[in-house]
Each structure stands twice: as structure tokens, then as C-alpha cells.
Length: 217
Image (cartoon, rainbow, N blue to C red; front, side):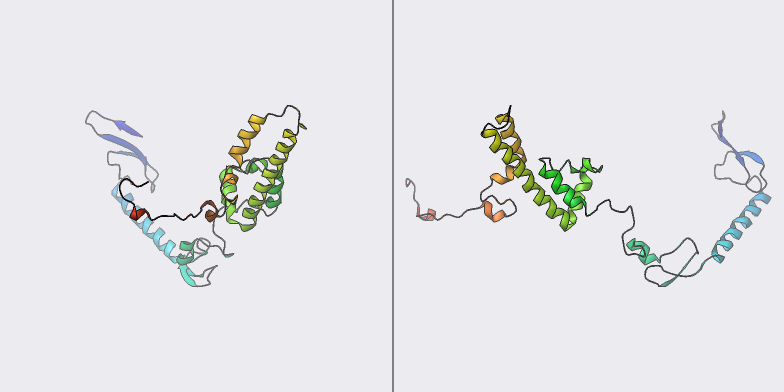
């Protein structure tokens, strides 16, 4: 540990890795206690380097089967395959995905009960952002679209029964506010939120705006 001295120097109490004797020094880079140990330390380091080089063998990559130089037990993949971060199975390295195909039907059932898409993760103990990443799977994305239709059907049936007086203590204001925020995309022109062209319309003028003069209406 360093000790502060009046000469504005910091002394370091170290242990020599060669003779195992403790010594003090104000040179932080000094490792060995004396020159004999320093020479022995250099030889020790060189021997370690030679031993390490002796362990380098010709290995075969577990992915592309190409031969490369490396240490057995440490290197299973060639530098090119390490750069691609690929395993022998061809899958990317990292934690396996939590996605399961059974979640498609579970999502449809979840939303058919009137619950939102964002709360599906709570039912299977995953976060909302994880559920969003599963939309890269076509079957899950299709289940999401079906689930939105089922959810809208649930709330529309509730509105029908509430308007008919079949639901006790039916709060019309809360129902309208809820549906406006849940299904606002359904209010677009053409009732097709997936089709951008359905939200546009064309019209023809009976006159040419370029031919208008000042004072014309």
C-alpha cells in the first residue's frame, strides 16, 4: 500500500514474485526487489512465452472446418467465424430466444378477453419490449392482427349490450373514452389501417386555378 512521505514521494510496499520477499520502492513500475531477481524474472517471463507458443497447434474450425493456428481447448473457431459470431449450429451467439409458437394462440385468447396487446407480456412474465421483438416472426405478427380484431369484437359486443340496457351500471362515457383510445385506427377513411391508400381520396376541380384572376371567386 502507498505511504505518503514529506519529500512528496509515494512509497509502495510490494512482494517480489521471484524470491517472495517484501520490499519498498517509490517506482510504481518496479516489480522485482533487486537485479538478480529482475534477471530471473525476465527469464521466467520468457520461459512462459516459449511454453505458451509451444501449445499452439494446427486446429480445425468447428464451423467451416478450415485449419488455423491456436491453443487446444481455447479456440474452437477460426478468426473469420469468430468475427461472424456463429456457432456450429449456425445460430447467433447469445441467450436463446424466449419465443414459443404456442404464444400465438395464447395472444389471441388474451386479446379476445378484451385485454390489450401490451399486457400480454405480463401473463408470460416477459417485458413489453421483448414481445415487440417477437413481431419478426410471421405467425406471431399474424396472431397480433387477429388478436386486435378479437379485442375490438369484445368491446363492440359490450357496447351493444350496454346500449340495450342489458349491462347493469354501464358507464357510457368511460366506454366511449376507452374505445376511442383503443381503436382510433378504425376511424380512418375506409376502415383499413394497414392500407395507406384507403386514407386518401381524389377529386376533380371544375376550373383551372391557373386561369383565375384577381377578384374571381
